[in-house]
Length: 76
Image (cartoon, rainbow, N blue to C red; front, side):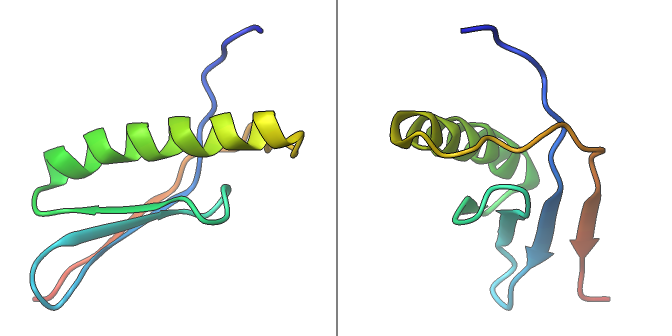
C-alpha cells in the first residue's frame, strides 16, 4: 500500500468545560477530544489512523484529497 498525505477538514470546538472537541468532517464517526490543543492534535492523528484502518479493512471508500479547513470556536 502506498502511503500519502491527505488534507482533511477538521472542525474544532471548545466545550463548556474548556475541553477541545474535534470532528473530522471527511471521515464520518472520526471524533476525539482533549484538554489541550497539543493533546488534541496527537489524538486526532490516532483517531484518523484508526478510522482509515477500519475503512480499508471493511472495503469502504477512503475520501479523495481535499484542502484543509480548521475552524476553532472559542468563548470570548
